View 1 (cartoon, rainbow, N blue to C red):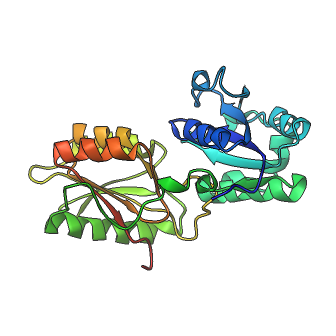
View 2: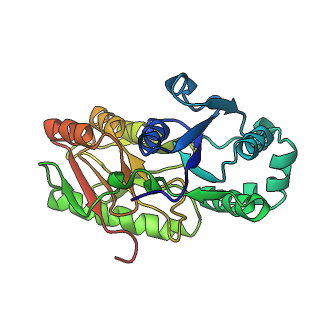
Length: 278
């Protein structure tokens, strides 16, 4: 896939995804400028390699000014982001204009849609899905690695899909943990790693729990796609999980080979499953 632009801004949150995108874009001859969310992105991993500036989530005007000064009209949002409270946000003039559209009253997907639509309408800035650069990270349906889910685990996956489908309209978390048909936890503000740790403490004796992670119904593909990686697998192993199911076609797996190696060594299954309505 050849990206339809020569310059790219990356709004970078936590994790390795922003760096992976920056490296791949640069290897395709695209000029990259990274905007690292203060207190969340690891700005040091970009320093000396790409133009980078940090910014506070409530202070978006400097980001817009840089985009305009460098004639960048294409963006990617990448990496996990902790949603700030209104008190923490302390919005500047541009952020206040965005908030005037009521985005903070929405769930995460609604908020992202609002920001994306605002940028396009007001400034003709286009937000692209991550696979416009990293098209190889999307998952094909089926078992990844050498370990397959047991019949009980397969049943737990279906239960997890049903639970997430029921919650989808409320625009809450993307992940749920199931053990023997019992819902141990639903992803909230703590994120997937926090969910894994919490449910590790709640798990019962016997075959361990399963993490199921899917996109929400109608979720935009331009930001916040379900993402797992080697670190997710390490956490799941550490907390006694037996497997991870993630949505085929609409999810991202980072460090795929390492994630599969770790899972195989621990006897943990990784599987890409159909999404809602498939």
